[in-house]
Length: 369
Image (spheres, rainbow, N blue to C red):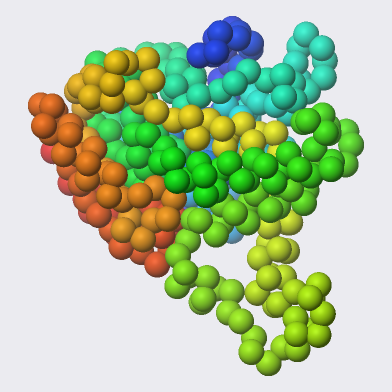
């Protein structure tokens, strides 16, 4: 088992796309060894609710490995015997209280007030996250990346890299993602998740630190994300109904067993997360559009000199797989190079994280080209 350690990178003055400048801290992990010519590096960007712990374990006794452990490691598709892999904690990571996460976000202390930023934290974009990662990469003396890759939000960040730093990116691999966040995802999940948090009586416009946390609203937001992230078949198996239970038929307030299970799971998850950071990450995802700053989406796509691989899941309810075909075709029509590799998974959106065996060989082949 690959053992890893968390490191911390600091930027004294980081300027956001919105114009605000603050000090920034970010945790990161590396796997493999950077070669002498520093040309074997791969950057992995994490998804909405993940951290920089993409692979390996911190200790041999750890129960859980990094979230893309099936893909990254010695002899695996992203072979750490060949590549030096980097993954960092996003700005506004939703788990700021996790001792293995280092992030700057709404829960961080504003040095000007000595209080948490709360809703005064700067508006954040995936371009900001890419820029922070760029500072980390620069500090290592790396001039070119063999690939930038990631699932979901991590894929969106990867495309920001390909557009904003085309001279640095040889390959871009986007898994269960899109170059523009689908409007339907904003309407069906993200917008409602934000509203669930805002309507919690304890939210108090983000000023809840040191007080009662908006756990119920955050738990409901988590439920919405979970329901969108998997398929109907998955839920029938993982949350089966009990046709013999009587309680839900006696009183409308009584919950079915499958309702209780999801509720309890969501409450426990909410206790590990920060509502403001979740809200900010929702808005960042909603706003994602690589065409921002250009005359059109075509103009943005023309900037991509990297070879592109998009890996959608046909059962994905959050990131429409059909949009990937449109993007791949358009990159090729504009003179670039792009491939599409579709997978099918009962886990839907999360198939891009949990079912790496479905696309590991394709990733290996693409990196070796």
